[in-house]
Length: 311
Image (cartoon, rainbow, N blue to C red; front, side, top):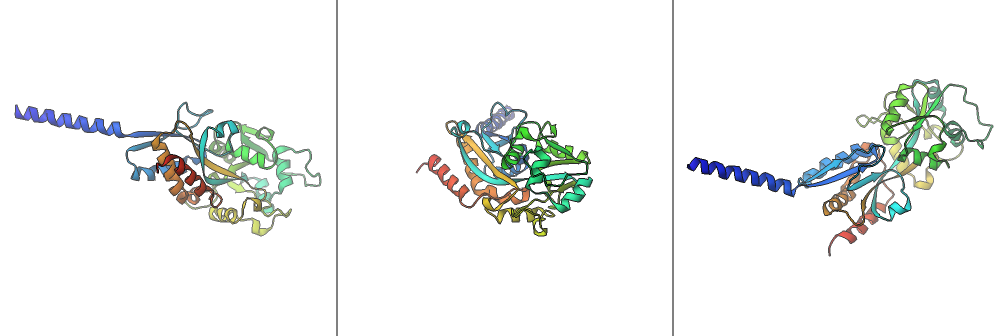
């Protein structure tokens, strides 16, 4: 009888402990730009060490965002009507570079020679106003682009004065990773990709089968040897971070931003966002991202704190 009573007590305590644990666990759902997911996962893993009762889940984005999410990570500037309803921190920058399949004749010529702004317009947009003195490309190539609206194609095309719909070429459904796979499969492919997808994060070298096409980085109209800094991820990041936005020519860049709803953000979501604002930059370079401009993130963190921390 005593053993039976003891057994009931043990079962009750175990049930109470498990139930209490589930009751205390809070769930945060994140969605947004897919090429940011490895970086976000690193943040999730690190945050779990300081907030073990918070479960953070990445809800993968399809053709549309999931029906419910708490935090959005995005790679392009959103319309004003969306901005007005959300709070932002701009945690990183990223670059979009022109690339080609490294086995192509095109890559063998232009990975060394480089492409200037006029040639970029000629290749990607069939721009009727491009200077006709530009050389005709006499080797085969096929332009690849994204089918769905997304950060990288928006940022790339807007930088050169166009829109995503203006790119002429094969449109690939899916994510930027799918675009990368398409380029690697076609020996005459030419495209654009976010910096963090172009390089192997383990060794810092370009992905096997991919060639980066150097551009006129200093804006003087020609491509010199000191503008061919693409052999290592670290050298690209250093070159980009050594310039302010006005000093970067012919490379499209924009911010990676995290946002929450102004009216409905849960306390645990705000706490995670504040943690990322303090700690998230530690991992940017390892994952192929660029630091935001000096002071911007600090100002946004102070503003976030002033709204959500009780004095």
